[in-house]
Length: 329
Image (cartoon, rainbow, N blue to C red; front, side, top):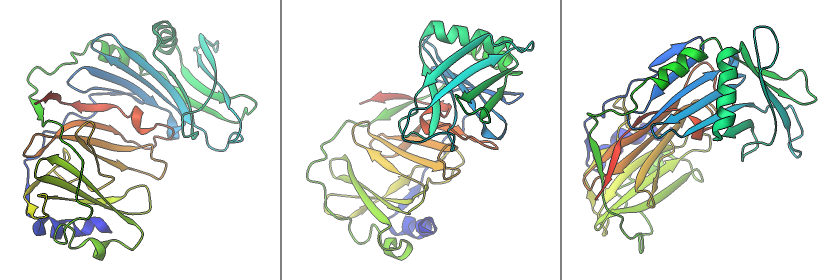
């Protein structure tokens, strides 16, 4: 695979190892398939995954009182993909009566998942009261009684109490400086030969791509990617405008490993991102973001969802386990 050429490339372009960022605590709370964690900046998340990944509940709560509730399940083959899907969400009590129910018609944008999202305070309050008092939450497709995703609720009360009582802010967390925006006009069209000396060797024809982005005047970041599946391997290089290779401190994940999958740089946010998916469904994995401070990349956000199965949980709903405070220069 392309990632195997990383060590040789790192030496070729003069990459210097950066000190690894401190790894944030993983899931700080876990009970009966319910989990909770905070990002250390402003937000806490409580979530649950049904057995075998058959459904999920995710509550995001911010320090300013904003909340968002997501309930969903994998669509699978339960309905014609060319027609809207009606599905019912309900909470059953220990006596078998549903204290809360909602009929939903719709899908997430890529039409792979059954998803209900709300930020309405009254709806969230009603749903959470039922969840804390209930026995299980079900997601059922109208007209298809054989399909029923179920999430146990035994751990819900404790998980919700944990995030309500947790201080969302880490007062000792250092801020990360982000360099000013810079023009992306007149970027070099092709990377210099030395920057990707091993690129062709490790990447079959037709499976590669290169992105160039200017980090500062006289500093151009090159990202070479390779792959045809859900995880594209990647390598980085830094050059001046004329193509001379410059030292680059490798951005690292909290486990001190360099990121190798699905790297991209967004000039609008001035953030480098990497996403590693655990399966072809792209519904489990880890997402990392770094800010460029003028000399090196520093971790500013880490989101992750892992476990025996995460079917139906898209990347935008992965719990954020670490978030730095960014200070723009």
